[in-house]
Image 1 (cartoon, rainbow, N blue to C red):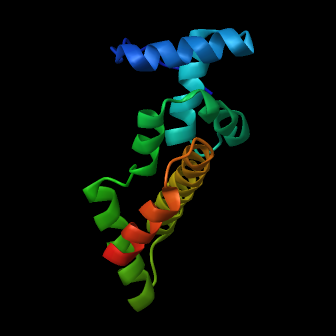
Image 2: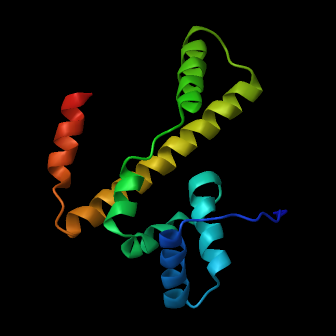
Length: 137
């Protein structure tokens, strides 16, 4: 896959976490960061390896994953495409876009679920969190 060079400023806690993971796995800091970005944005990422790394995340970072949601525009677009698809036929490009957005939702759901498991194993009241969230929906 072609690559681009990007200079990026990241918070020091993310750098620290990525460095711990890279030292533990004996790989480069760059590869850890690339894998993390791929898990969030790529449709062909190695999710198992990334999910194993959640054990190194702080509680705050795990809660951030739990609260990760689509952007407003992504959510609106999915709803629009699903509504239009139920009323009429979507173009090939629209079907591809919808499938891509739904895969993103699936990846976020998997991340969220694994983050909740990690938090529960650390003693957090994740079931209480889920019940509160379910009641709010």
